Amino acid sequence: MLNSKIGRPSLKTVLKTSTVAGLAAVMLSTGIPGQVINSFADPVKVEAPQAPSFADVVSAVSPAVVSVRVQSETQAASDNSNFSFNFGGQGFEDLPNDHPLKRFFREFGGPQFRGGPDGDRSERGGPRRMRPTSQGSGFFISEDGYLVTNNHVVADGAAYTVVLDDGTELDAKLIGKDSRTDLAVLKVEANRKFTYVNFADDSKARVGDWVVAVGNPFGLGGSVTAGIISARGRDIGSGPYDDYIQIDAAVNRGNSGGPAFNLEGEVIGINTAIFSPSGGNVGIAFAIPAAVARDVVTDLMEDGKVERGWLGVQIQPVNKDIAESLGLSEPQGALVVAPQEGSPGQKAGIEEGDVITALNGEPVKDARDLARKVAAMGPNKKIEVSVWRDGKAQNLEVTLGNLASEDAASAETEEPETPTPSTEQALASLGITVAPAEDGSGLSVVDVDPDSEAAARGLRTGEKIVSVNNKPVEKASDVEAAIEQAREDGRTRALFQVESDRGSRFMALPINEG
Image 1 (cartoon, rainbow, N blue to C red):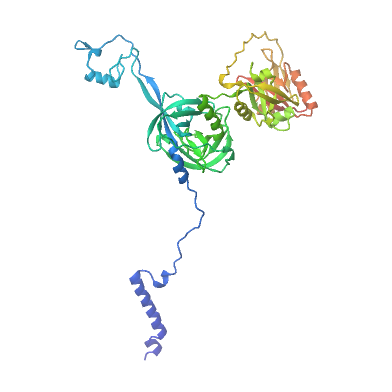
Image 2: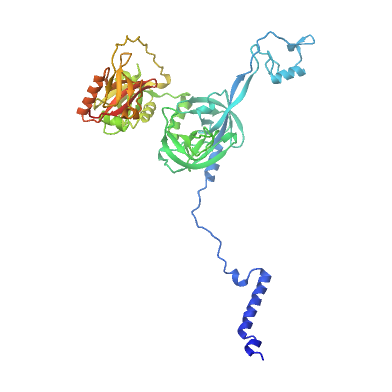
């Protein structure tokens, strides 16, 4: 006899069975258990700050940015032979203009023939043709058609075409160019007003600020990239006025001359160069600052050229060691390696070894700063130049020359006297061995201890020491006397002027006891 608990299912068992059956019914009808539907979590959604969009800037400035196409004139090779064509008793010039052979040579060129529509012949060579030589970018800076690009884009051109954002092609003429800053100005003559942009106050631009580059990379037409300002004041060795803004927006060939905008749609810089081992974008591009471009462009629009102030001295930076050797409290200013003969600086009394510390009372930070300040002052201007000489400051009045019309002076050289035989002498405290130079001026470096400070700072055998602490030296004892005087003055370094086949330079060497 079955137990009642076993033979008859309990109420609890029935409820469980009903629940399972109900759940199965729900699964069949919906595919998802009813009790599970409400247990799913909401999808992930992050309440992040709105990402910046450059669309408004791009739509506003794009009509002002153009592609620049440059063509140069070439001439086909000439044929100066006396060979002449004869076709059935007729000379080439006697053939009708629609003759197949004449059409052939008109199209492809031929001896003593200019490929013009009327069959004109040239006495010298073949037809002169225009061929594309370069293309870059540019942007309008006035509604009447003035636009800015790079000098290296237009340098060798004979004809220029600008392509607007809407595809319109217009001829342009060259107004002026400046190789020292790599800037040029073109002008489009058209019966219309152009969308144009303004230069920004780039002194307010900070490292980390957004920039938008618009241009014509690889001839593809209007392209936009974005990035940030990576650095300021970059010197890439392209010229005496290097002061580039470094950006990481993608810039490639064809972007040259194109603008880099801030988020207000103002030109913060003009894209000019890239650093690229491979030739492609690696995120390091250099732009001419707006402040530099503004002044140069203004001069080009007014006069077609740029005139700059000219001091006429060869300079180098003042590092910490040189400053210490000269008794300067800070490594600032520009060290004069040599004043050019007949230059404004030489006429005013600037000498080798002077450190130019200020112009009109405004401090000079370094050699590049001096070059930019002098250039910006313009020609024929009287200025006060502060120099550090023999441990004290003094002021000189200089009338600047004109760099645009400056002609290099050629000095006549005299035959050197027959050198007097002499013996080599070691300067143990410096780790070098010297001998009087063959030309009778200075000391030739005969040997340099490879473990010495002189070797570490670049002194090489065969170079010549001209002066020590701005005092000429012709024998080893002159060097020792200058070093001893420096010690008495409480200095730990002496300033050596060194000449080589690469030019003249200064270096500061430690003056050890012994």
